[in-house]
Image (cartoon, rainbow over all chains, first blue to last red; front, top):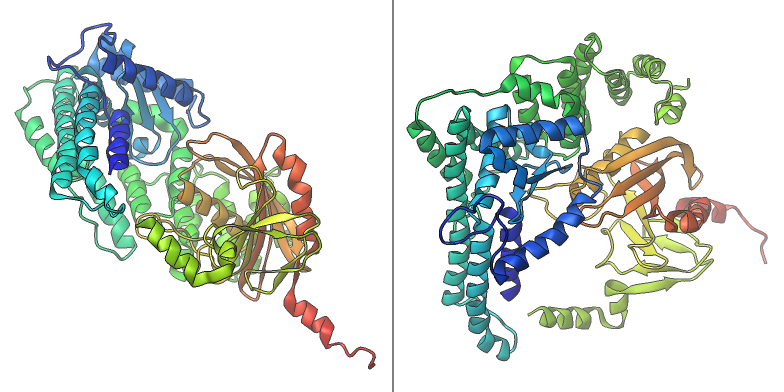
Length: 384
Length: 213
C-alpha cells in the first residue's frame, strides 16, 4: 500500500507541478523551503537524465516552433521552462516543478492546430505556475504516513494486507486532490488561450478527439470501451474534462479566436512521416485509422493514402490486403506519395498470389531506391 | 500473499521447480529440443536457459550467457498462424500483432519490430538490413536490428535468422548492448544458428536402414 502511495507521489511529481498556498510563483522563482528544494533537486537529476535521452527529438525547427507557441501563450515567463520533445508515440505531456516540460511525439498527431497545442502547453504551464507538484507531494507524504500506520497491524498479522475502508478513503483523497489540480490547470489553460488570442474551444476539442480515439480503438478490436475510473484516476475522466472545458470556453470573453491550423501544419510537415510510421507500428488499427482520416480532413494526400495502405497491410487479413492493394494503386500515381508505396503494392500483390504483378511493382521500387536496406531480400524474392 | 502462492507453486512442480523459476545450464554440445517443438539446437559454449516463468512464452525459450541485460538469445520455435511472437502483457489495450503463415520475410521482420514496439513502448527500433539466409537447412532470411528501451537508454544491436516451415515460424534472435557485448558474443549465436536442425530431418535420417547387427 505504501508502495502505491509512493508510486502515486512519483507519478504526481512527473505529471504535474508544485505549489504554495498563495497560488502563483513569482517571476524568477527559486524554491524556498526544504520540501521544495528537495523536489527541485530530484527533478534536476531527472532532467539531466531526460536531456541526455536517446528519445529527445533534436529537430531545431520543431523545437523552436513549440517554444514560440508556449511563449505566445504564457508570455515572457516561458523563459523559465525547458521543453523536451520525446519520441514516444502516445498522447501525453508533463511538467516538473523545476520548469522541465516533456511533450510526447504522439501528441502532435492528436492536436490538430496551434490552438490545441497551445492548450496543452498552457495546461502544463499552469501546473508549474500554481506549484501543483509541491502541493501533491505534501499531500501524498502526509497521507502515506497515515496509510503506513493503517497497514501496520495487518502486516503483523501475517502480511495479508487487506485494504481497509480507511485506507481506501485515504487513497481516494490523494487521487481526488490530484484531479482538482488537473481541473485548475484546465481552467488556467482556457484563460491563457483566450488572452493569447487562440480559440478557447481548442482545449475541449482535444478531449473530444481522445474520446473518439478510445472508441475507435475498442470498436476495431471488437470490444466495448473500458469505462474510466474516476475514484482512483489522477486525472478527471475525458468526458468530464470535455464538458467543463466547453463551459469555460463558452464563458470566455470575446476576442480573437485563432486556431492556427496553417502554421501548425507547416511546422509539422517534416515530421509527419515519422509520427505516422510510429503510430502505424502500434498495432492499433481503429485509433490509427481515425487519426489518418482526421489528418486527411482537407483531402487525402499521396503520403496519407500510402500510410492507410500500410496500416491495412500491417494487419493483413484477406480483406485488408485486398483494400490495401487498391489504396497502394491510388498512391503510386500521386507525385506526393513516397516510392515505398511501390514496395507496399508489390508485397501486397505477392501475398495475394499475384506474383508477376508483385515482382514488377517491387522492381519499380528498387529502381527508385537502389540502396534500400531490404534490397537484398526483395531482389531474392522477386528473382531480380 | 505472494509467498503463499510461491510455496504452492514450488510444491506443485516439486524438484523441477528450478526449471520453471530460475535458470538451468545448457552444456556445450548438448542437443536441446527448443520448447518441445522439434527445433534442435546445440550450443558451442555454455548458456543459461530461463525457466518458463522468465521465458517469452510457451512456443519460445530465452537463453543468456551473462544475464539478459548483457546478452540474450530468443528461440521462437514453431509460432503458429494467428499467434503473437511472445507472451502478451496487456492483451486488451496493447495486443501484440499476430504471425500469419502467409507472411513474407519482410513481413516477419515488420512483425518482430512491431511486437517490440508495442511490448516495450519504444519508438527507437529499426530493421537495419534484411537478406536471404537459411535456418535448419530451410530457405529463410536474416535481419539486423537496433533499438533502445525507454527508461534504460542502452543502445542495443540484434540479429535474427528465421524460416517459415509448414506454416510455422522458426526464428532465433540475439541481442546485446552495441558497445562491446554484441560483437563479443554474436559468434555464440551464429554457432547455434549454424547447427540448428529440425527433428523431422533427424527422423528422416533415422529411417534410412542401417547395417543390421
